[in-house]
Length: 367
Image (cartoon, rainbow, N blue to C red; front, side):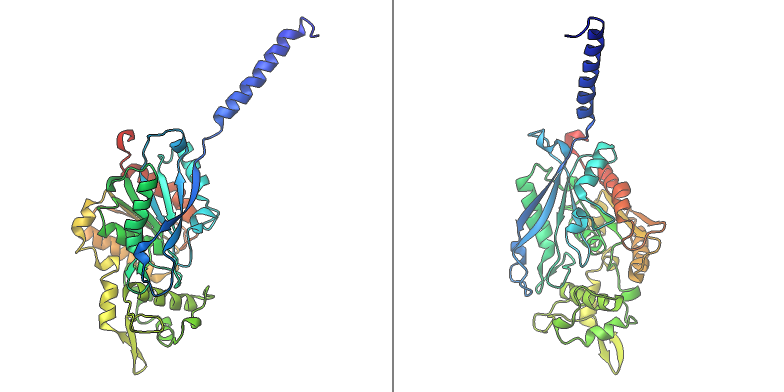
């Protein structure tokens, strides 16, 4: 039995305890959901590397997705880099980045609007598809543009229009974002390229890179180191994979490629036909012919770390920005302090990428 004088205090303490529980429950931020899916990939049919016709992807659904039966969302497609896969975004690959936790934090703090984020895998038997159509590796561009986008739109409540789709990526993924975006404003309206590789033939893609000579002397796929243990081995793997994507030749085993250079009398010189195919698919040389497409985009952002290790990215990024400016194409280009090729990718995602898409994408009636 509670004493009369104690009873009011007891009741007050109970009420305060109940209130703290309730308020604590309300204060807990809502959480989104990460869904793992397998996406049919008919665009890869007939590839010579025996890569499967079903590919993994993860889909982030924002916190309100399961509490609203009708709300629709814009979608950002997040493309990983060479040697990597979708786990780069979901399993701590970039400075501990985990997509669901980062997106939940950005949304709860008001730094990003709610959106669906799709991270596909585009790692093939050559360790990177470069998101390109190829008679050797399969049509990876079509896989993203058709198979994946159609799957996501059919199975989730998306705003199925270009104005509500963005594409972003790092390194190989940055290259993919640039090429897919500039060629297909009918699918994507905004591009964010982080440290995009392969923008041009300058820097370490030039004939002076000693890795070209070693690559040209390879005679077996077994000679490719996986994973590469040095920059020299890395370039050899990249040169084979890029050639399979950009200058494939099913009649030229063992790699089924034509390289953009050839060795003659101990000198490395252009292989004109293959070199022209590379240039036709590198963003720096695609700006003029795709000017109308680029002007349709709602936003283009490119960033590179101040301490970027790859000369082709340092030089090519600046040249690409200059080419866009020359054609009067609005974009932002940033060289950010201290960053290497991959050291601050999580920071860029948290401070730049999704804030950019929150501004550039159409959110329908909710915008």
